[in-house]
Amino acid sequence: MDHFEYRGDELYCEDVPLARIADEVGTPVYVYSTATLERHFLVLRDALVAAGVRGERGGDPLIAFAVKANSNVAVLRTLARLGAGADTVSEGEIRRALAAGVPPEKIVFSGVGKTDAEIAFALRDGVAEINVESEPELQTVSRVARDLGVRAAVAIRVNPDVAAGGHAKIATGKSENKFGVSFAEAERLYAKASNDAGLRPVGVACHIGSQITDLAPMEAAFAKMRGLVERLRGEGLHVERLDLGGGLGVPYFNQPTPPSPADYAAMIARVMNGLDVAFAFEPGRVIAANAGVLVAKVTHVHVRPEGRRFLVLDAAMNDLIRPAMYDAFHDIRPVRPRDGEPLVYDVVGPVCETGDTFTRDRALPPLDGGDLVAFMSAGAYGAAMASEYNSRLLVPEVLVKDSGYAVVRPRPTYEDMLARERPAPWL
Ligand code: PLP
Image 1 (cartoon, helix red, strand yellow):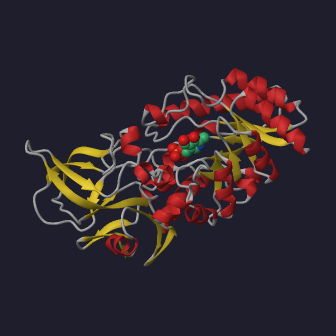
Image 2 (cartoon, rainbow, N blue to C red):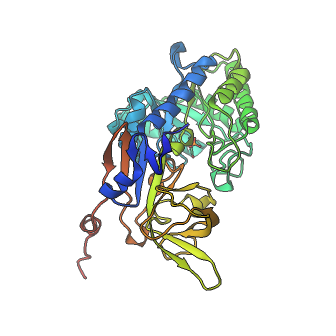
Image 3 (cartoon, helix red, strand yellow):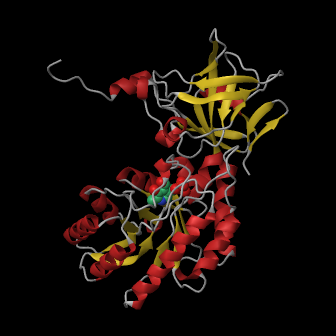
């Protein structure tokens, strides 16, 4: 459930008409709903707790929001206030999580190519755990930790070799993907880390893909993870944490319905029954996707002589790359629908790439220049993946709460954009 709905003939975010934000902040603009972010976090947490899935010392499991999905500090702070941790993949993301008030002991540092400097930063700031993705990285973490005179808490990320995820580009759990190590490798590395003065292995982790709408591959992967914990313990090794990653899909309009958080939690409780370990999760999309929309304005409608009708927007692939990158489907709703029979449109942006096409042959209520549309389910992997391609200004972000809103990332000016660059001395 989200808090974007029509009231009369007007699309609202909570108690704020989207048209008001478009008027006052301009378009394109991302708009997030506080109530929806909070609801999605709490529904997931409560489902896990109700199913008996526990964290450290029998408390709540760690729900480390995947910062890559939505890295706006105000969004992170909204979740941190409810007790969320942060799953991060760069020093920048760790800094964002800390700036949002996420305690270091709730920050997980993942990613396949952490640099020495990033590892040192994470260790100095006391992040909870570094999820190590390969043997060379384990060696690097050990060296950097010993140089700093500390023991790094590490989890070994396993690649369970299970196919899952809504699109090949977001599947991460097959052995041909770059993420994690095999089960046999994990056992060897865990034993090795246990005898390393720079390392303190605390657990194992996996993340098999994103936008997963079927529990079966997750269940298969999680059962294998349980087996790994038991084998490691059987070898006398100490395992306190099991990080099951993110990946739960969301109900994008017209797409397969994902399992509910309650079904997800029940599956985990079933697979892990009796396993005494502190559970952690790294959800991104399931919390943020349906908590945000991208509002854009129709620049004009261009009808080709052969009849193809292009709805040209002021938003482009640099603002929302998911359709170009993953063939992603976003429901598109008029902010103030006009009466009339639906028409079939190709919805495009102004960027000079044919890939700057949000959708083709989409039936929408009639639209004209100046009308506003909202791309639904754009709160995850939307603004976080935006760029300035074509020297378009970085898209702003707005956070709504009840009947008020705040611009939580203003649109930069062209002067800001140009001020970041320097002339070469010979030019
Ligand atoms: N954890 C890791 C290691 C990831 O790579 C990702 C996404 O790519 C996530 C968590 C979040 O995935 P999702 O947004 O599907 O929950």
